Length: 374
Image (cartoon, rainbow, N blue to C red; front, side):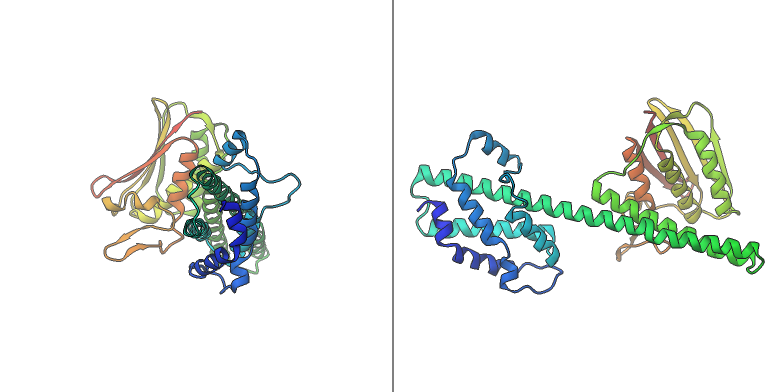
C-alpha cells in the first residue's frame, strides 16, 4: 500500500498513538483532553498525504531540505503553525512539541511497515523519503511559529518593564525631590527613597538586557565615534556620587577614540565598578586603567579584598549565578539577580572584544577588557 493511502485509511489508528504519546509528555500547562491533545494532528497528516500525492520538482525538494516554507499561495497558516500555537498556549515547551513529531514519525513508519509497507522497494523508498521531508517541513514550520510567538511575548515583557514600571519609579523619585525642596521631607530620608529607585531601575535594566540577549542571541548595540577616556571620566564621577565613600581613580595615557556604543560602554564600566565596590575591601582603592593595545584599546578595573576562587572565576559570568558554595550547587547572588557580570561579557562580546578576570589574595581582583577600535 502506498504511504499516502495508508495515512488516509489508517488516520485514526495513527492519531490514537499520537494521543497516547502526547498524554505522557511533561508540560506546565493544564491537563488536556483527547481533543486538545490531538488538535491539528489530523490536518498535519492530511497535508502530508496530499504532499506525497503531488509531483515534486528537484527545486521543491531542495527547498524542503532547507526548511523553507512550501505554504500554498493564499493560505494564512499551515496546520503545523496552528499546532505550534495551541501547544504553546497549552504549556508545552518547544522540545516537548518536537518530541511529539518524533513519536508521530516513528508511529507512522512502524504501523506502515507492520501493514506490509516497504515491499515495493522503489516506490516505497521514494514515499518514505518524501514523508520524512514533509515531516521535517512540518517541524520547521512549528518551530518557526513557536519561536516567533515567544519573541513577541518577550518584546511585550520588555515593553512592560521598560515603560509601565519605570514611569512610576520616575514619579516616586521626582516626588521625593519635591518634598525635600518644600521642606516636608528630610534630605536623608529622600536619599534612601532615591537610592532604592536607582536600585530597582538597575534590576529592571538587567532583566531587560538579559531577556534581549536570550531572545536575540546578542546584546543590541549602536556604534558611533567616541572617546572612551572622556566617557569613563563621566562614569567615575557618577559612581562617586552613588558611592561617596569610595576611593576611585582613573589612569589613562594614549588615544582612546574609536567606534563604541556609548551607553553600553558606560553600563559596562558602571557594572564592573559596582562589582568591585560591592565585593572588594571597603577601605581600599578601586583603580581603572586605560591603555592602547596592538589591535585596539583595553581597560581594567582592579580592587583588593577577598579573592575569587579559581573554580568560580568563569562561573561568575553565568546568568543568575554568583558562584558556587561547596556542596550546595549554584545559588543566586543575595544582593541582586546575578546578571551584572553576564551583561558585561555580552556587551563586550557584541563589540567584538573579550573580558577576562584574574584574582588572588596577593594581587587582588582585576577584570580586563580588550576592544577593537572599529
